[in-house]
Image (cartoon, rainbow, N blue to C red; front, top):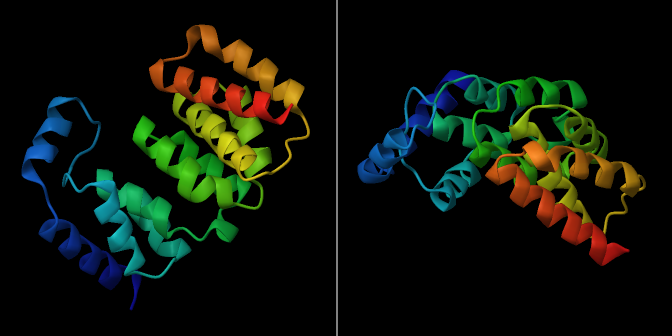
Length: 183
């Protein structure tokens, strides 16, 4: 199957799983998407399990301004193919804290350059990529991965915290707790 056929099958699954009430609430809450199906994350994961991980498909789904296709893109991107360059391209267009949270857990924390990407994102000024970075580092720490430059990570957390939004503040606090447990 080519990308267009896979996309068509994915959108059929999304339409059949659509939750109109949740979709309307997300739109009312100001979610920045052209289209929202209102499909919950567990159902999105089960849809993702039906399709192959594929870089071309994931990039195509990410490029759409649809909540569910962007979340599925995260789930369908092979972690070994998620390079620093690709991660930075996706970070520039990350649109919500939900994308940051899902990316941190499902994709970035499994990428081979996860630590490097996360530390670079923490040094930037994008709230969503910084949130993703903090959560990714927390996931890595919880799995027993050693973070060599803890002082730099703590300094970045302290720098970001005063101006951080709610999601980033929670991610920073979670990361600091995980760092303290390792010390």
